[in-house]
Length: 316
Image (cartoon, rainbow, N blue to C red):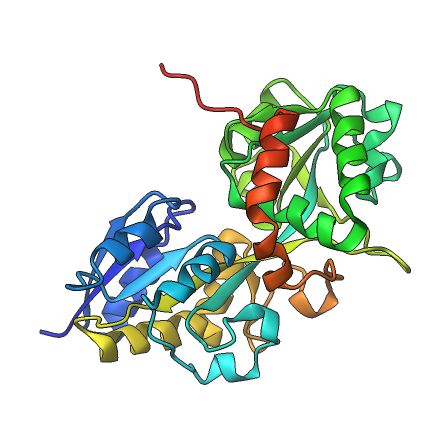
């Protein structure tokens, strides 16, 4: 029996249907262990001398890139990834993006039914019309840290500090996670949350009154931050051939189409059917390389912690 073992730091939405499709199509018995996304790279590093898994999935480019110098990943130049723009993979193919996470404004359509009132730029959220109406996830979410680090690269520290100060002065509320942020958007309610586009799709598909507003996409706009879910082959994996087969399956047009239709995730394979998901090629990205963003992670965490983003889940 051929086998594959996966450590997944990408736990919501649950990718069980993808693993089941892979197992059904290949006959490779697939076992998945969910690991907290901040711990999964450390887990692999701790097992370096006796690897227990074949593949890592996680919800960030930053995390595997920061772990890459430890040599815990085996580069794999998957055929799909050869055509990637450089920002979608490690320079040595140690990790590969499998869906993108563009940042958008999640709009509560019950609070803002008129499209003309929706924000079109991040700076719009400083405006008094959004007083006490903006939500954002805490720094425990890598996408929050990455977005502000990328803004520092593109616009500088003075701009980012002034933006954060203005958002808090305007009553922005920070919540312990992306999940709590979108729940609060509807429960409280608030008008806008900074979120990943796929979060909007999943929440809307659940019947919630939300939609997406794209920020800074017009002529001369600075663009929005785009992160990605990633996959990596573990160095010394017990089942490397099966791991490579899974990575190819994950990046295939069929699986990418499935991820777009089921979870609203942005395909990285241009041959996928995007459906209602905005194609990656049409999104203006912040002009910040991953290396530049990674260099600012620690100081950005310190900045956000000092500014009020260090909000934790209360014990029940």
